Each structure stands twice: as structure tokens, then as C-alpha cells.
Image 1 (cartoon, one colour):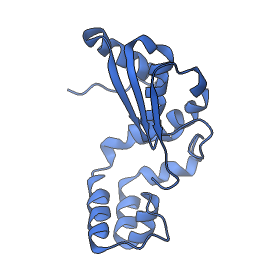
Image 2: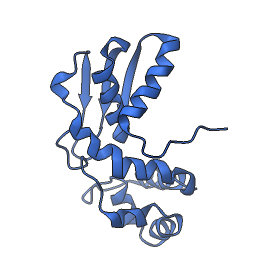
Image 3: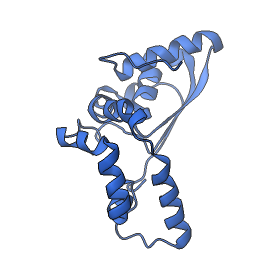
Image 4: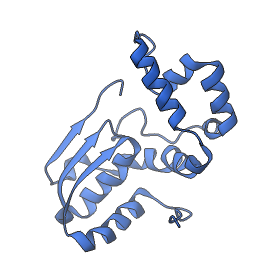
Length: 162
């Protein structure tokens, strides 16, 4: 049975859980992607002796537009029926929400890739707790991470349109 995320969990708690895992394996290379960047940054800040190298890929970073608590109406967007309706009836809008720039001219291969990606998010219901955690806890918490205080070799790859 999968472990459940405790109520009131934070990225620092996630870093603590990762540290428990590290007790069995000593040090690791860490990659934080998207909203997972916050807990990866917390791990490098709180336990630098356990992190050999840190890579942040298109991650939520301090000062970025995503480093905010999402508006309450965003909770409506994590429901399966509205997302399925948007995917089915408004595929261009859904592609934009998935990160495809509005000016990007998609080829047939691109359209298939985006369609497969959007199909892969279903069923949405099991992902709801994680989506809400990212939008309402982890994204804003990244503002408490001082990139200057990280003392492990770090690579940050960030793009305007990831």
C-alpha cells in the first residue's frame, strides 16, 4: 500500500523523508523537476553533506512567476470532469495550460505528443492531493529557499516556456 501524505506536509517534511531514505544509501545526486524543485532545494540546504550534486530542471525557483500560492479558483482545475471537457472540447487551451506557447506551430508529431501527454494525466483523481500540494504549499514555499546558501555543485536549467 502506498504511503499517504500527512496533513499539513511541507517541502521541508519531504526533505526529511528523503533524508531517512539517505540513511540507507549515504549520499546521492539529486534532480528536482518542476514543483519537485522545492523539496530538492530544501534537501540541499538542510543536508548538504548528503547531496553530491543538485540539478534543477525547469523548476519552481525563488522569484519565478510560479512561486506563489495559486488562487482558490485553481482548485476547480484539478477536477476530472472539467479537465476532460477542456481536453475534449478546447484542445488548444488545454495544450496552452500544459505549457505549449500560443505561437508555437505544432507539427503532427507535436500534436500527437501533446495529446498523449494530456491523456496520460488521467485518471486525475489519484493525483489531486499532489496537485493541491504543489499549487498551494510547495510553489510558494520555494521563496524560503536561498539559492546563495546552497554549497553543493548545482546546475539550474530554466526556460521561459518549459
